[in-house]
Amino acid sequence: MSSPYRKLCLTTSLLTSAIGFITFMYWTSLTSPAQPFKTQTLSAKNNLSLQMNVNISKPQLQKPTQTDKTIYSFSNLQEEVETLSETLLSKLKNYRQSKNVVFKPTCQGKRYRSNSCDGSDHCLQTQLPLDPVDRVAQLVTPERLRLTQQHRKALQEMGNSVRARYDVIIVTAASSNHFLETQALLKNIHANVFPYLRNYSLIFYDIGLTTSERSAMQKFCRCTVLDFPFHKFPNFTSQLRCYSWKPVIIKSQLPNANVVVWADASVRFIKGAITAFVGSARQHGLQLGGSYSCSSIRTARSMYHYFGDEPCAYFCLGQAKATVGVYHNEYFVDRAILEPWVACALSQDCMCPTDLPNTGCSKAKVIEAQLSNLNQPIMYGVCHRFDQSAISIIIHKLYQNYYKQIFINNHPFCQILRRDTEKYFPEEDNVDD
Image 1 (cartoon, rainbow, N blue to C red):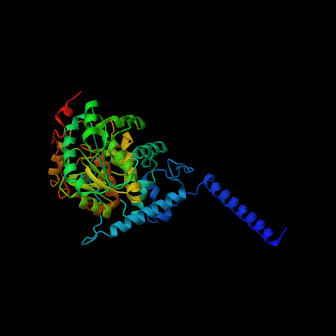
Image 2 (tube, one colour; image 1 turned 60 degrees about the vertical axis):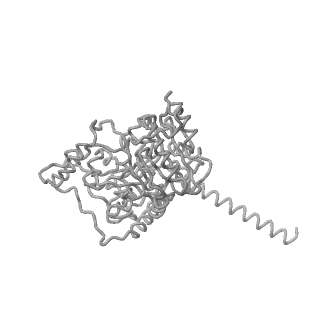
Image 3 (spheres, one colour; image 1 turned 90 degrees about the vertical axis):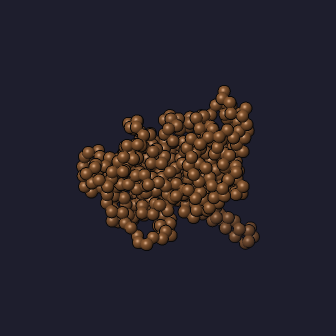
């Protein structure tokens, strides 16, 4: 055997051995016991596991699959939290404010604690965490705020129903009782939005149209009509009033676009304003309509408890208007905001508890009007706003005194006109079955 040939064989043998060793070590790492989650490296000054009131030692190590490329292990979950918190800190530093206002504790005193802790001294977290690492960790590490493999697969299948990729996807959904309201929305989008976008798509989710209404929608909406797959999610999600379907739709379409715009049937866009609205979301990550309504009064106490908090910790922070929202396709938004939002939406205990009061939010308005009266007790959870309540908790926890950078005045971009209807489709296609 010639010397060059002998060298070639030796080199090939060494290379094969190296590849075999690397392959062995890789699969060993996937099947070996995971290292403990080191909360002390996240925040030495806080006992994170106690703050979250969850057991963070149970996530299962899994091999990557085609439907879920995320590998939850103790070590990379820690790294994920650290990476997300760095992104959050970077976002917060970009917000200018005359002075950095630190939230003061709002659970002190009998009046403010009120019915927050179910009338006992055994409270959950009564002050929002200051450390950005803790803010993120409390939203991404609890198992109940992470999607199951089954639900991840269902969301991916929903996303795969849209074949192309776009810069902007506008998405909406409606049942039969909002059919005429949706026609008014579509007329508005066709005139005030479409001419100002490039590389876009409009998607409509049918969550309860009649056969003739669906046929008319397919003919005239200039959109893609899809069915919402209620059968792939918990039974309670078919109760439309729980709004679980909305966060699911938004997250499922995020991989298909740079920006996803959600619009309820009541949204009416200002002509040409969509470009500024989308641009603002690209800058901030997401933009939602905001309000001065006290979210802790308009959110079930059990939802706060699901997130590990007491409602008094969020005393009178403004609530989101999830009727309209723009979501930028970035890892922080998808993982730290949309995933816990959807995980909550798919848990009845979080999104749609069975013991909700039957009354609307008229009593909440009375309580809000009397907040300046120190003799008037504060009552939390007078009513519940479902998807709006859940995303408000998430944004409040992450952004705290900067949450109004996310909850904005929507009037420069759109109006909310409930019960504004129009027969935009040809008359013969507006006849019920």
